[in-house]
Length: 442
Image (cartoon, rainbow, N blue to C red; front, side):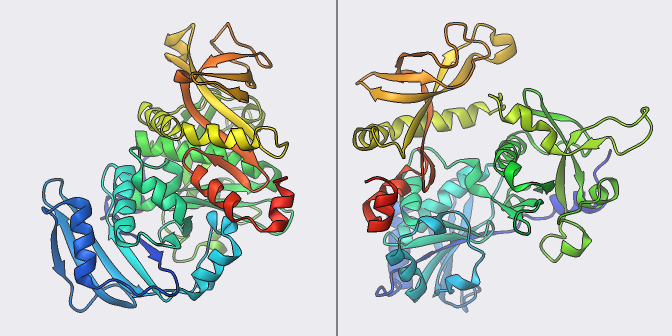
């Protein structure tokens, strides 16, 4: 199936810019344009070229200037503006981990500082640069808002991500909205991928119970498409072992498998009417002739409920290894305080050499539940059934070398926190009100 002309034109058109702003505390005035220029020069060096925009282009801006780094070809703009009220934004993710004082600080913020650029062929690197520029401008930020993804980021995440040697996760580039009536199936769609030169992804008629696991599949598919490029519509692509998907333009998807719970033509407004990729599992036609040949992605739930092998690029694996090792001391410190707390579960992912590299790659990344940490080892129980590491099995406890670590995560009542977001968890624990401390067993 060839790509429709409208879709090719959409993908070939100049990419939309990616604006992000940071709210300043209520009692903080914005820096002057000169002070902002100085801060950016200190961060990026004297080679940075800057030019004032008069009048400012950004809405509500009091000053704005464009910047260029000739050595790497980067161009971006920065501005100061009157803060937009939080109530007018479609907030996602980290808004729920803000303390009452932080939410109050957002609602009373008078000024914000913004950075905008157009992403190129390495969107994660561009996003990382944007975070660094924003932190240089607003080191005391209360929180940041990624306009393209309708996503609020906690100030602690902004600071740690900007200062890290590794760029953030591909999942930081977009959000997923699950739109449904209470208790009924709904429509999952992403926001944020179009600025990366990709189509936003959608799933139709997904039950609330299945939404978590299938959201993980969307995360992996988005990262796969970002790395490998968008396959032709209707072409099966394997994003993990026994996890084959196809996508169709939403117009054709509605003709083949009309959704019952959102995503139909009535929902296609100015934003959701843009070209998007609706994901399906390949199906069989009746007698090889009748039907759409498409199945719901919910067909993959039995695989996702097991220990699926999701294909991850080498660059993403290296990024997670850098980040997990960079912040391993934080994990150890938290385990020392909370390892005995039944409300917290600590997991590490270790990359073991495989017995069959031709089929499974050189290393298989396996999750373990932590019992204790040593200087160079972790005492942990394997919680996945390995596919190609004969010495391990699900439920086996033992000592494992920490040099094998490739990822880690902490589960608790306020969410899941990996190496990328552990600073947010630290902040939540430090500022938790009495009721939450009781809930967390602190």
